[in-house]
Structure formats: C-alpha cells, structure tokens
Amino acid sequence: MTRHAAVPIGATVLDTPAPKAAERVRVWDPLVRYFHWALVAGFATAFLVGDDFLGLHVWAGYLVLALVAVRLVWGVIGTRHARFTDFVRGPNQVIAYLKDVLSLRVPRYLGHNPAGGAMVVLMLVTLIATGVSGLALYGAEDSSGPLASMMSGMTESSGHALEEAHEFFANFTLGLVVLHLAGVLISSLAHRENLIGSMITGFKRKED
Image (cartoon, rainbow, N blue to C red; front, side, top):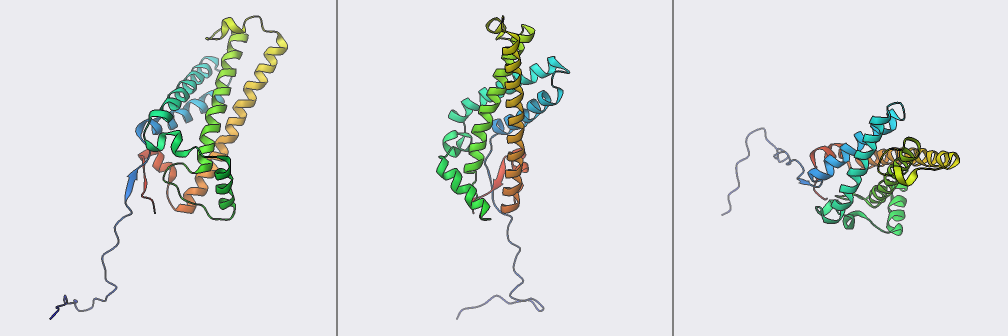
C-alpha cells in the first residue's frame, strides 16, 4: 500500500517551495570586462577634453588604440564568447535579427546577438580610424607622436581635411555608442536581465 505524506492542517497543494533562482553562468571574462570599461573611460575622456587639454586627449587616444589592439588579439585567442567566431555573423543573419526586433520578437543570445556582434566590429573599425587620423593630425600640426616624420611638410589644406576626417570618425563613433546603448536597453527589457550588470559581474542567466 502506497503511503502519502501527511499534509499539515491549513496547508494546500499550492504550498510548494519557492522556485530556485535562475542559474547563472559566466559569459564575459575579466579581460573583456576591463577592456569594455577602460574603453568607455578612454573614449569619453578624449572626446570631452578635445583640444583644450591636448596632452590628456593624446594619451587617452593612445589608451584607446592600445585597448583595441589587445581586443583584436583576444578576439582570436580569447575565451569562447570573446572570440569573433562566436559573434561575427553574415549580413543576412544581422538583417534577420533586426527584422525580429522590429516585429517585437527579440531572440536571446548568451553572448553577443548578431546586431551586437556587428556593432562590436564596426566600433573597432571606427575607433582605429579615429585614433590613426588623430595620430596623423598630431604629427602634422604639432610635429609630435609616432607619425610626426611621415606627416611633416603637409599643406594647410591637407591638414584641414585630416582634421575634418578625425572629427567625423569621432562623431560617428559617438553615434554608434548611442545606438549600442539603445540596443542594450531593448535587449535588457525584452529578456528582463541587466546587461550592463552582466558586463560588470561577467554573469548572465543561463540559456532558456
């Protein structure tokens, strides 16, 4: 005869233990997280101080370029979700993901989603363009920096064009930052998880 556990007086079948908290897994390794926040600080400093504090602007630019170089290497040899092979996808997949977002269907990815992966690549490219054009401008106008000898003797019109290019790439990168923040907000709301917090702790909720 099968015996059933006695139910205490006043209890109901609904009095079950509370469900456990969602299991979390480490997604972002320390290097990715430190890179992310150091890049935020470096780009923000360079953008905000501009030419008013040229020395600080230049060193912030050096920091950004150094961080990008490290991230490029880590994108090849790093941990699973840090590698480009984990999040760089073709245009068709990126477009399909954006269509899902516009249809209010936001697929969840443990690492970067296709649009986020495309944003990472695009931002790395524009940061390199901003930094290199800044080094060239620094060499042309102040005869300083690693490109000084190469840029010496540049005409005034060429120097002006170089300055315009540097400002364009800096402003374009800022625009990408705004789009990146919008994407983070949309994904955070859609999946009810704090993506900014995950870039601090490294942990995200396990895949559904």
